[in-house]
Length: 410
Length: 155
Image (cartoon, rainbow over all chains, first blue to last red; front, side, top):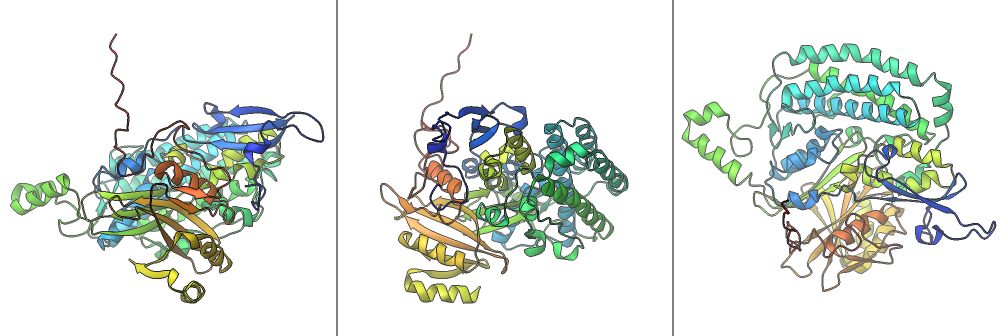
C-alpha cells in the first residue's frame, strides 16, 4: 500500500525497522487476540515509538468458522441460522438481507404486514446493537456504569424478540417468504411499554456521557478520517455518515417498504470518534420513530406469501390435507426450489451495508453465498485512524468502529 | 447509469459486455481489462468498491468468476463486474492501488479460492492460518477438510 495508497502504513517495511532519525527500533506489541478491549478475538499488531503508534496491522481470522462454505451444504431456509451467527449482536438484520435476496431470486414479494414486522424488528435490533456498542465503548474509556444501563434496556428488546421468535440471541425469525410466526398476543402492549420508557433512558445515557468533560475531551478529534479515505476503504453505515456522507440504504435503496416510513438520516462531518458516537445516538432516536410508526400502522392480513411452494403450510392444515403434507415434506427435505440465477441484496445493518451475493443453480441449496460483512471493511481502515496517534487511541478507535468479529471472520 | 455504460462500451468496445440480471446491471469483461475498467468507472463516480468475491464453477473452463461490486453515490446504484479466470494458476490484476478496500477483499479471495491478484502489495492468507493447505471455498475442497479428523482420545 505504500505506493499510491492513502496514508496506510506498509506493515512489512515499518515493523521493526530502525527509525533513521532517532536510530531507535520501535517496540512491537500485540493487542489481543485475547485482549478484552478488542471486542472479541481481534489481534492488532502495533509498532510503538514510546506511546506513539508508528505502524498498525489488524490481524483477523481467529473466529473463522467457514460460514460461506457451510451455506453450500444447507437448504435455503436452513442457511438462515448461519446468518444469525455472523453479527451476533444484531442477528435479525443479517436474516433480513439474506431472505430478501432469496425472495428476489424466487420473484416473490411478502405481504405488507410481514414487511412492516420485519422493519420493526430490524430497527429494534439496530437499537440493541447500538446499545451494546455504547456500553462497551464507554467501558473501554473507563466509564463502567453506562454498560449496566444499556444492557438493561437491551434485555427488554431481547425479551421482545424471545416473545416472537422463541430465542433471544439467534432468533432466525425471518424466513424465506415470511416470518417464523405472527406477532404473539400481548406483543403490542409490551412493545409500547418499551417505546414509552426508552426515551428516558436515552436521555440518561446522554446525561451520563455527553455532559461528562472526560468523555467529550477524550473523544473529540480522536482517530479522525476524511470523507475520501472513508469511501476509499469502503466504509458504510454510521461510520461513513459520521464523515458527512448521507448514504443510508434505507433511504437510497429502500427495501421492505422503508419508503413509507418517516425518519431522518443523522450525519456529522467531523469524522472522529465523537461524531460516530453522536450519529449512533441519534440513529437510536430515529429507529424508535420507525418502530412506533410500524406498530401503529401495522396492516392486517397475511404475514407470509400465499401458497405452499415457498412458505410451508401450517400444522393444522397438514392434518387435514394430503397435498399440504406433501408440500411440507418436500420443503423440509429438499428445500425451496430457487430458480438459477444470481443476485446481490443489501440492507442497512447497524454497522453498515450487509450484502449477500447469492448464486443459485436451481436446486434446493445455494450454489454460493458471499457475505459482505460491513465490519470486515470497516476494521481494515484501523491503521489510518491511529497512525502516529497514542496507543490509548487504538482502543478508542476499535470501540468506535463497533466491530463484531463473528462477521469479520465469518 | 445508461450514459456511463454507453461510454464504457464506447471506450472498451466488445471487450466489455453489459447485461442485466434481475434488475441489476452486470458487466462481463476479460481479466486484463479490470484495472482500466475500474479506474474508468471510478472516474465516472463509482467511488465505492463494495465487495470482491469469487464463484467456483467447477467443470467449466475458465473455472472461476471473480465478482466485483461497485456503488455510485449519486446514482444510488450498484454495478457488478464479472471476470472469468481459469487455468492451473488463476490470476487477475490487483486493483488495490485503485481502491484501498480491495486490499483485504483480494486477500480473502486468494485465501479462499487460490486466485492470485497480480500486483497486490501483500498477498497472503487472511482468514486461514498461514500454513494451511488448500483453498476452502473451492468446490473440490470437502466440507470436512482435506485432512482426516484427528482420532478422539479417551483417557
